[in-house]
Amino acid sequence: MTERAEIEAAVIEILARQLLLPETEISPEARVEDLGLDSLGKVEAIFALEERFDISVPFNANEPDQPDFDFSSVPSIVAGVERLIAAT
Amino acid sequence: MRRVVVTGIGTVNALAQDVPGTFAAFRQGRTGIGPLGLRDAERLTIRVGAEVRDWDEGRFTPSELSLYDRVTQYAVVAGGEAVAMAGLSGPLGPRAGVILGTAAGGIRTWEDSYRAVLQEGKNRVPPLVVPRLMHNAAASHLSIRHGAAGPVLSVSSACAGANHALGLAMQQIRAGAADVMLAGGAEAMLCFGGVKAWEGLRVLAPDMCRPFSLGRKGMVIGDGAGVLVLEAEEHARARGARGARVLAELAGFGMCADAGEIVAPDPEGAARAMRAALADAGLRPADVGYVNAHGTGTLLNDRSETLALRAVFGAEAPPVSSTKAMHGHAIGATGALEAIACILALTEGLLPPTLGFLEPDPDCALDVVTGKARPARVEAVLSNAFAFGGLNAVLALRRA
Image 1 (cartoon, rainbow over the protein chains, first blue to last red):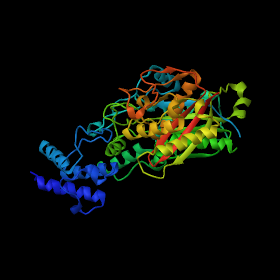
Image 2 (image 1 turned 180 degrees about the vertical axis):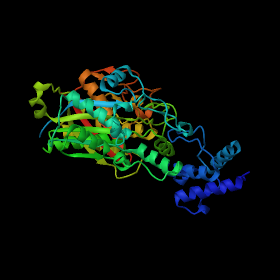
Image 3 (image 1 turned 90 degrees about the vertical axis):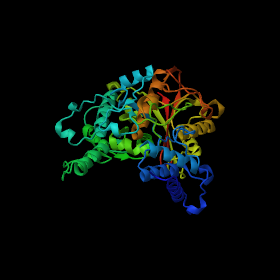
Image 4 (image 1 turned 135 degrees about the vertical axis):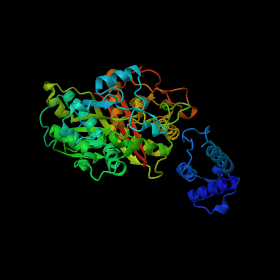
């Protein structure tokens, strides 16, 4: 079982790598929009999460409200990853 | 400056394997999008596409098949139809050439070869893999089959390939480098690796392409080829007695680059390309009666293209449709399929529809032709293509 803290650390690490920021600058409550991640960075981050946790994230860049996976903030991404890990 | 006319068209696509069948589908508003039947489709997340179905490889000899990837097969069949319609025969000679767009070239040959050496553990691949997969194979085989010994090349500009090919071919004729050009595009990317690559970008729709509609979920890939016979007008008129029928004039071409983002479109670049095509054709915006949009059905393209159309045409933008919900997004071939849709509009006064449309999107406030073909006499049309890489290519066609 992957711990929530471990998932959160991985999400922050992956976002930081896409944003070229030190991990310390991304708070556990950060909103993705405020971080300035562009659409390519988003699909690369999702791919990195899939590879890290061996999950498949349902995400279509053409659906603005993202009904299947809430990518709007660090907590929502962590919750989404947790759910996907539990389902595997 | 020499005027350039279209005297023949040919196509293979998900709707039909010839022009009459494709025109019938455009008139009826029938889609070629459906479940993918390709090998290993069960391992794909996206399982719809506009495949060419019931393709008969038996029409080719074994020696042709060892050289013809599916992309070449589609191109030579479409090219043969176009040349026959134009009433041309025999070696076309050094005053004739070929320019075709393709994005993925012989991708199935790459895939089959990697499967052989990596998956099946073989230590050799067939000897003709290189000439089979090279991007210029389709253009070269059209040249060989029809004896076109003038300017021959392939162009690769992603989703704008066929529009660039048609525009460059027109310029060859205008410049006096050729009298006849076979131009268009061919694509056969609907194989496991091709779709897998697209899945990664997260821009494919899981069900249907819905250009300019609220609730659109992205693009649907298509396969196929389209070839147009372009001729110097005086060349076509001089052989008129032998049956050359002028279908339309290819009147203008505008191309430019956004020089900005690699995949996100820029409405300013799209508008510049449309204005350049209009200026090249000597047309005013008000002369244009129909625009065959790039209309991929992605959130970004359709919004950006709407802004560009409003910038060029103002509030009175002409009727617009995207035929990609019928033949799919055939990437490097799509501009040729759409030029053929434009020729239907010019010759029959029928605007092909945008299928899959659910309800208007306030971000795409355009007169979208939806549901079924709309009768309208049009004098001139634009056909848009805006590629990944920020490459914009727009064609202007006029009624003959």
